[in-house]
Image (cartoon, rainbow, N blue to C red):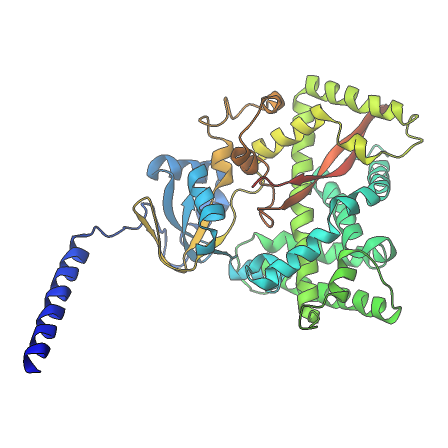
Length: 447
């Protein structure tokens, strides 16, 4: 018996020594190169004070396709190659969970679908996709066209307008149509719009919650939004209104156990969808107008394409049809090139759920992981003369993996619905003004 115990002990000891030696000989993954900046602040001040192309570009040039940083209160790793981004978002997506800085999560609401990746996320995504489906868009084309015409008419008085602000109001009204439908879309619209714009203004500001700061004003606006939305929900319940909009879908939802959504879950997802659909689309529209202004020949060609549709609709007597929005090749290429050039979503947020090794580098558990779309969109290895606005580049076939990055306007639904984008509908002269009607269209993601 003692001999058996001795042999077992010796075997275990030798195994421990040999395994320990192998472990010591195995090279350990190291952190990526980069700078963590100042204590606590990290490189956040540089991020806010520099042109994004400069901030990201200089670091990629200095450190390569993967580098570490510290922004918005968290350590993180930035990835700049298609292979690295696919690693995080597709092939090894289970190792990274969607996440945002706590300051941003507080403003939108912790129950918003893009802060989760479990069954709850799947359920909420289905509800949102149902409300923003192609069928829903097709049915609302006349309503969206009416909002567009009303917006453009408000610009025709000869006054100077703030383009981005006006387009934010337009996209807000369209987003409200999808969320609240035709019945409630105008009831509390001005209150919602005013407080949402206050929230949005401080969303990307430095997150110091001191009285009078932009971030503090956003926090207070978020509370007021909750009260306004609560009144809308109360009114709908009291009137027993059954609508096929997003709010109606959220109110009538029940899971397999018969559980309904909590009040806060409904509020957070409404504000989350409003945030995802409104600001980025308005930004894109502003850039498209800028590019149209800069490239007069392109503007004339798009006007000709839209005037042909306008003429086919008896000079605007007939509403724009869904089929017509899908038959605007030049307009579509201009939108895609605007998405690439503007890169209005520089990166998205993920968080490593465990220690992850990628190409010999360690991504620590709990660190933020930020795939950089902007750097790929402006990389000459993928796009010839990337800093030139050239819609004709989309006349040729482009790999689906690259097209995903080009159209990464919003990363909420990477594998299914990316986002809704606004498409130029018609352009014609009205006295000395050039009018443009913008029409919602969908971009489906590429797996």
